[in-house]
Amino acid sequence: MASAPTASNSRSGRSVIDRRLRTERVLAGLCLLAALLSLASCQWRRLTVNDPIQPSDVAFIQAGQTTMGDIVAKLGPPDEMAARGGGLVMRYRFRDGKYFKIDAGRLLAFWSPVTPEMSLARGQMETDVFQVVVDVSGIVREHAFAWQSPAGQFNPWPF
Image (cartoon, rainbow, N blue to C red):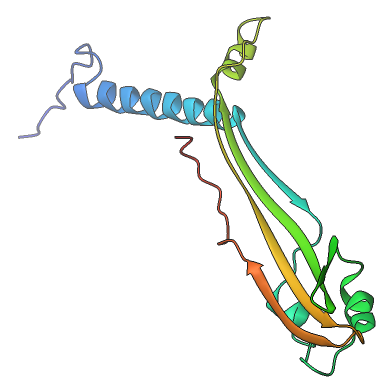
């Protein structure tokens, strides 16, 4: 006997699995849109005043041998010079600042002509000083970083 093909009924509608998959895709798309909008409201900034001096930049200095002219030729003129008991103290200052800001008001720019500033921000500005002590004849006696700040990092948490 030959078997007859059976007819299938496709009027039952979409399955529960199809609806769940579509819902998950919509939620993933909304999360991606929210993440992109949040990034549009973030600002990262960096400010450097004077060229930062690294220990490798001053490795050429030898106490008792290097002259003030050698230092000025390599590092440029100092920010400050002060007399000190028969000699000079030369100070080189440099600053490095980092700043992070979230402005939630910028999110309203997509829907509203008015964009109030609703921001949370955090920043850090550190001052480093490199000092050189020279005697009356212009020969280096001492040199050191008077303050060397830790390497600043961007912190996305503004509190």
